[in-house]
Image (tube, rainbow, N blue to C red; front, side, top):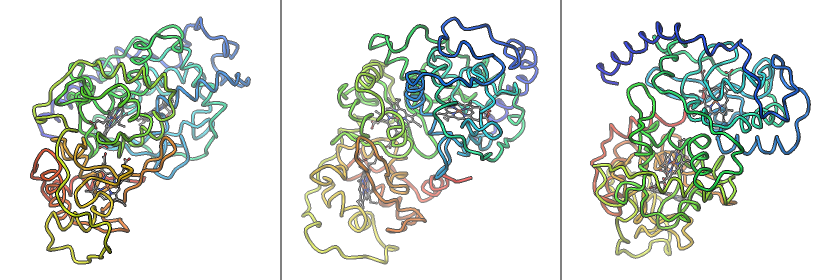
Length: 463
Ligand code: HEC
Ligand code: HEC
Ligand code: HEC
């Protein structure tokens, strides 16, 4: 981060410390909340102890669905770890924030949380001990959740999730962000949303779509650029943002920079399966969001979500000069896949086309058209290859694709240092990516070996 920004952030956070002590009173964790009027299932629980009575199956099922739509598992599970046991490292400019264990284990997880404690954490970013959560936990989005949905989710976490007795490593951020109290000023800046009211299951299509997109699936957490205080820029809703090496593209209704040419069915298929032939696939963090969250939503909910997203006001991106999915065409070359494949061991002197033929053509075809069943997608008319931001293409080459959704396992090997297929160097990845975008996409973006090295460092780390 440039020095200027750091200084501003620093001074705002320090000012925040003073402000925080003034503003902390209304949200003290040990103050009992006013009784909620719409709490039939759990209203009998004493506010200060966790609810122990078995909730109805209907309530826990609803809670599970809401937690799935909210994709809690994405952040609260370490790579290879037990679901909801925490330990995932989330990189921020101030250091890594480690997600916590939210299984109902009383000592390592949130077993001692009452429903009120839980509501304060999820909607207001307050931990049970009264300290403030870092905004890596998207409580600003979740603050829009209805009372009923928070209640249902609590019932499911307490009764439907397996307790795991593991404490993840503690978050250690740089000063002044290590002072959790400074997060209070972040709250003032980022604000919070007034919770939706009534029964979210009975909303009309557009309201339900807005609720799913904003209060639950938090599409904006990744797709909306952030200001200096790391909160989402309201005037650039869903306009695209970098994300740990990936780039969550502009998904506003702009026809050149966004997804304005997609139909509602296209978007439903994408969210359900992660794959729309001749248009786009979901790799990396989006692949995970599809696998763990959106592919489990009902068709009605997906249509509501898609209808809402597709009417978000267009925001242009100067870098994009044509619809991402519209670039390129098949190369006029014979398909090598009918002949014997030869193994090439010395890649060091190889140029883009050679690296492509040796590593990609077996699946995507020498002509780039992919397999006839679209399992390996076409590289032209492909939004990742046509994008003016080559980030997702580089990350896909390094990381591969590994997504199970809609009953299909989409798998492409990665080509980074740990690859058991082929380890491509930074220079090779750069040459390959420039060749692929020049041949099948929107042109050569002049990716350098240094850029690839930086992105390699962003690949998932285990704690
Ligand atoms: C984008 C990542 C992300 C998502 C999605 C997410 N969380 Fe979190 N959550 C975090 C992080 C990181 C922390 C720890 C923050 C800290 O240490 O200040 C946290 C902390 C919490 C805590 C406080 C637990 C404690 O005492 O430490 C609760 C409760 C919680 N999350 C519940 C949820 C629920 C429920 C959902 C889904 C509706 C959810 N989270 C989704 C990142 C996430
Ligand atoms: C955890 C971060 C994250 C979340 C949450 C997220 N996305 Fe994404 N999204 C991404 C990334 C990264 C990509 C690029 C994926 C790739 O390269 O394959 C992407 C790609 C997409 C695309 C493809 C765009 C194109 O032109 O190819 C669509 C559509 C999309 N996301 C919609 C959504 C919607 C709708 C939501 C909310 C339900 C959402 N995303 C939530 C990170 C996220
Ligand atoms: C073993 C077969 C295989 C090989 C080899 C392979 N791919 Fe893929 N590729 C796939 C599959 C399968 C997908 C995922 C399709 C999906 O998401 O549904 C994919 C997806 C992609 C995507 C879209 C990813 C996104 O973010 O949406 C790109 C771009 C891509 N591959 C480029 C390449 C390049 C460049 C190479 C050579 C370094 C390569 N692939 C090698 C099978 C392969």
